[in-house]
Structures are given as structure tokens and as C-alpha cells.
Length: 295
Image (cartoon, rainbow, N blue to C red):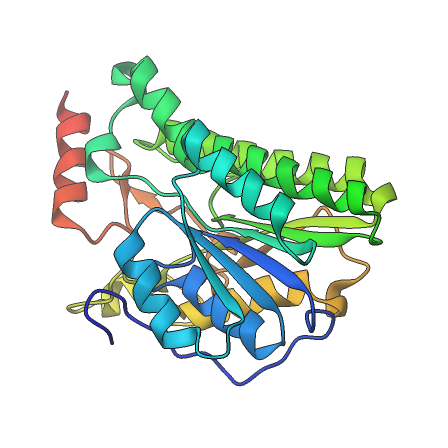
């Protein structure tokens, strides 16, 4: 572990079709799934552009993984027009055409948890901005560049959650945005198939991630909910992403791969009259749900 960035352990795999290519990982410096994807792509011989708004973490990532010169850190907040323009210029001026894109950014904070009746226009806009809007524009930027270059196609993977197609009480904006991202990915897949561009998504469940589910404390009761009896490692999500990016999935497009230990196959994940999410571990998030339920 570095000062601020937890470097995930990943298997020594190499994925065909990535060697000599350029890949773009948006949100790859968080120490979780995105960072694990970066490592797998580097192992597979790809040059990797990592976009993140946190310059400190990007610098740590570059020191850890960039010794061979195949990692290019780019500081940009893609939730802003300035950040998107930085990304657009990076893609346009790169020596190699960006053949692979991964969008990792997304999530919800305790302050954004609340009931549907109390939802605000500002909250709605924030949910879409954080979990769907930016991915539309990054996919568009890369797809346009791929088509203009005439290189014979590429692949894109958007990260979502395995519960995106279920009702998610107290998370109405987040749920709608994640569902929109899945739907958009399927639509992109059909529209871009003729250009040789594949588009898929990976929906994760309960994982040991530094930003989502830290895995601290006694989680045995929570993990009993998962058919496989444990939460996933970030590397297990990252290998799904790398598989879909690679030539191993050359005939796969428009699909969502749920990597959740079987959790999405059972339910419900909400209990009691207040429909409390059983997967919440943060006390701050639990307080927000209780407050919303009492309101």
C-alpha cells in the first residue's frame, strides 16, 4: 500500500487483443476495480491512459505502474465540460488510436440517500452526472475517434451494479442512473456493431473495495446473503472487464455481466417495513436510510 493509494493484487493474466493497443481507463486511480483493470491491461501489453481527477493518486499510480513508460496519467474531472475537453484532446492527439475504453466512475454518498418523495432536482442531476452522463460523452468521444481512424473497431466496458435492474429503495436517483447506463450500453452496442465496436457492461455486487465496501469488521452475517459465501475481490471484477475488452469476447456485445457471487439471482435485498438495504455497512449510510424512512 502506498501513502493514499491501495494497490490491488491481480493475477498474472494476459488478455489477447490488447498488446500494442491503447486503452483508456476513466477513474482508474482509486485503488479499486479501475486500478486493477489498469494493471491487467499493462500486463497484457497495452499502453494505458488513466484519467482521474485526483492528481495525488494519479502520481502514486504512475510511480507504482509506470516504470515501463506504458502508463500515461491525465488529470481531468470528466463530470465537467473542461474535463471532457481535456479527455477529447488527449484521445485526439495520442500517437495510438484508443481501442479500449473502461468507465469506472460512479457511486452514491450517504448525503444522497433518501426517499423518493424528498428527492430534489439537484439530487437527480447529481446522480445522472456521476453515474451515467459522463460515460455517454466518453464513449462518444472514443467511438468517434475509432470510426474516423478506420482501424477496424474496438471495445468499451461500462461499470455498473448488479442490482441496477431491481428496485432500490432510498436510492432512486442512483438506481435510475445505473439502469440508464446499462440501457445506453445495450443501445450503443447495436448502433456501433457495424463499425466493429463492442459495448458491454459489468455489474458488480458486494466487493472488498477501498471506496465501496472496505471489508472492515465482522461481515460474516452479510456474506451469508451471497450464495458463494463471500464478497468478491476487485481483481475478480477487473478480470471480467479485461475479458470483455479482449479478443476472448470478440463475439460478445450488448451484454451485462453480473459479477456478484450469485447475489442478483436471489432476493430480496431489502428487509422490514422500512425496506432497509441489507448490504449497507456504513453507519452514516444506515443513519441516512433510517432518517429517510422516518420522514
